[in-house]
Length: 115
Length: 111
Image 1 (cartoon, one colour):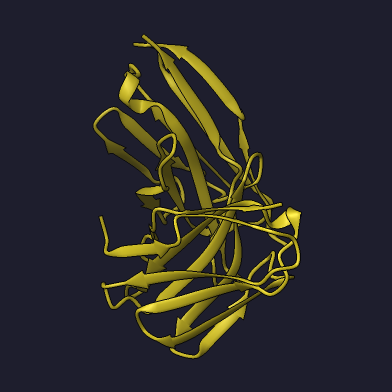
Image 2: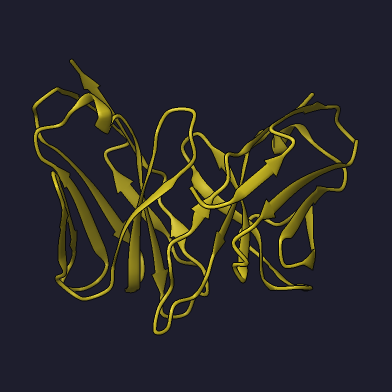
């Protein structure tokens, strides 16, 4: 498996509190992604990064922000957690191959419960 | 925006039976990827298809990309219990920077 870790792996929090999830990679890949996974929806992209300090929104970015100050770290922040943000969050990394896109390598996931 | 659909949502098969999942995109794709996620695990890349009509094989798995590059399929011959999991397709069209995932097909294999 690619060198990707996520922390924490499990978290329970209360509505209205801020939460930060961390993704750390040792592969020096340029691209990093945050997805959420919910039953019946597959994986939906929240935010992604194409370099240090270069980030952009995905399809479900409302209520989330990200930061990437180093190549190896990509942080996802829920500014004020809501119950609808209860989900499993996956970080992924990839490196763009010449003429195409390489596969994404996924981290182990973080299970977040917002009460 | 681009939408990716998969059918069926669930499939239960007896060990040794074949299995097929289908992926359809609302837009023409430049490439498509397939991933497998074991229960409790994370998605793992299986393959990428790029060319119209492309067919690739990995042991008992056969992947096809449609001629119009709007659909794809994954076929497993003679399923085994190790094939249990959810299979996702992810497509990228010519206008998007990122891949859009389908909702997945969950495969159960009865021994």
